[in-house]
Amino acid sequence: MNRVLSIFAVLVIFLIGSCKAQQTETGAQESPLTGTGVLERFERELTSVVEKVSPSVVTIFALQETKINPLEEFDIPFHLPFPFSPERRQRRSLGSGVIVKKEGNKAFILTNNHVVKDAKSITVRFDRHTEKKAKLIGGDPKTDIAVVEVDVSDIKDIDKRIAKFGNSDNLKVGQLVIAIGNPYGLERTITVGVISALKRSIGITQYESFIQTDAAINPGNSGGPLINIKGEVIGINTAIVAEGQGLGFAIPINLAKWVMEQIIENGRVIRGWLGVVIQEVTPDIAEAIGVKEGILIAQVVKGSPADKAGIKVGDVIVEVDGKPIDKVRDLQLRIMKTKPGTQVELKVIRDGKEKVLKVKIGELPESGVKADTDTEEGSLGLSLRNPTPEEKRKLGIEGAIVVGVVPGSSAYMSGLRPGDIILRVNNVPIRTKEDFYMAIDRIRETGKRKVLLLVKRGRSNLYLVLSLE
Image (tube, rainbow, N blue to C red):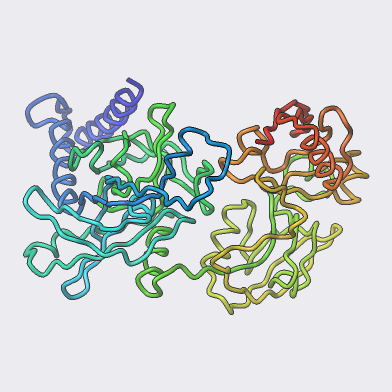
């Protein structure tokens, strides 16, 4: 119902604007509900866009194989005295894709990494009568983008099927959008909505700046295009919130295009790397350090480009090459897209004074890098740091500050988020991150599996329950 009302509101605004334009041009107002009215013209424009873009959308079938130990289903607590091979099971995943490029007889299709991950074989359906085996060029789990290649030498109209890119950097909340995909195998299903929000982070990939839309997205839509009213692809549909309605998310096409080009050129994504753990400047932190905007350095990886350039814990990055930075995701994406070996200038605030540092960007290792092993509490998925002397003095706090939480981990499920300050564990005061780890170790030794945490978030305290299982 909310989606219908949203689309109806867009149409009403469109009609009112068009009617005013007609009245100005002709001197007489024409009813939008007549046979030649605005509503019919809007409908013709919409169907024209859909007819133009739909041939670009394909169905992707991926045959995936997983190893399953059937004994795990019976929760057998001992090891068998003889070798046992896990059972191999196959499943066929369903998703969507969009044709975005052609070189010679090969077409490249953009889709989601989770659609084709670990696939033994990939089949692309162009229409009811045309299916082709496809080859995975590469996938990037950090953005959930993948590229597959198909031989299209016998598809005569392939040039007309190549989608056009829009510019996702120019999007505005409220713009009308169309999602095209194959939900539940229902090929080329069209849904209409608006852009509900931009630069969303929902914790499913490492690099996130999602377009949020209320255009209906369902299982099977993954990898399909989100288009504007010009018929340009502005996003790749990738996620939904299962418990909600009208909550769909798409990867901005500018990000997806950059990842695609990296994959086609290199077979993988080569990212720039600074080597720091960062967090937003919260109101409390801003009050303590006297800096309202910027990105706070919570940790520096030893031997990293940041370490070599002299960046220190407590520095606040406010500019990169003269451009202001005030969001974590903006800094992440900016550094990610910087070619390794490039020198950039970072303006930082240190002890209330501006300082310009020159950093030679490195290449992010494919396996990733941990800041310091003593800051990772095993399977809890939690990274902590100690408050700086300045924070202790001005805020009057002691505790362990959360700087990283792995999505889906025990820490994440408990409700812990970056910026939280852990004050107590089972009502025992915590002054440092070392206190926290020792408290957790002691509790584990007792066999307990639940821990009560007192956490300071912003100006308020709250209790959270952390599972050690």
